[in-house]
Amino acid sequence: MKIGNKTFENGTHVMAIINLTPDSFYANSRSDIDGLADRVKRAIDEGAEVIDIGGQSTRPGHTPVDELQEWQRLQRPIELIKSRFDVPLSVDTYYPYVAKNALISGADMINDVWGLQYDKDGEMAQIIAKHGAAVCIMQNQNHISPDETLWSDMFDFLQRSISIAKSAGISDEKIILDGGIGFGKNKEQNFTVVNNYDRLHKFGYPLLLGTSRKSMFGGDVNDRLQPTLDTTRQAVRQKVLFVRVHDVKENVQAISNER
Image (cartoon, rainbow, N blue to C red):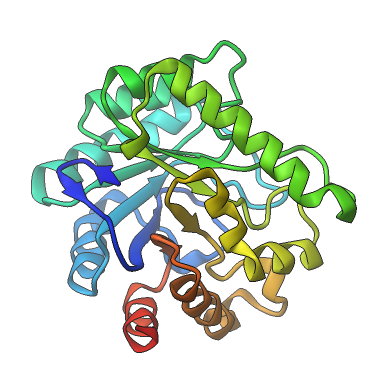
């Protein structure tokens, strides 16, 4: 897979989460502009190979912000990161307006939690294709599937998203799939998907797993590192290309130990 000027083919790599929001569920992932350069440098030094920034929390019960406010949160950070660091930059957004401005400003990838399906006219996919950017297509839905249709609902959603991407002209080497842990699934279904994540290889695209400190692990968010690392080790065994995490150093070590 190509993200910016980097190619990722084998093994499991780390994407570091840096949130530019006041309400992200894990406070230690939040950053303001003053501390951003130090946060990015530390993530890279600890082994992150892609930085993922977001201007809107997507945690359960979050308060949505509009596209203008989201872009205001992202504009300066994108410019700062791209001017100081040679690292692929992913921007977490489902707004076409934000994606367009982010890519013009130098972002390399759009991480879309609605899998190119938030806008109904395909604008997001067309913007990504026009800029030759990469895309992370995440499975999502507004309801929880019955257990008996969990996988078929996921497969149907992802197939629609892939079709949208292909129709817009996004190349295969720029697409990665995310099973959407914590989105449109109950706790048991989240574990079912994680434990069988390699089923998503059926589409022929690399996979990204995002479980870092999520509520599926129960308890306090500050106590969820070890179960996160367990799923990272599973990801290595299931040949997942990327894990998207808050704790870079620990996850890099978990990947190394599993090889």
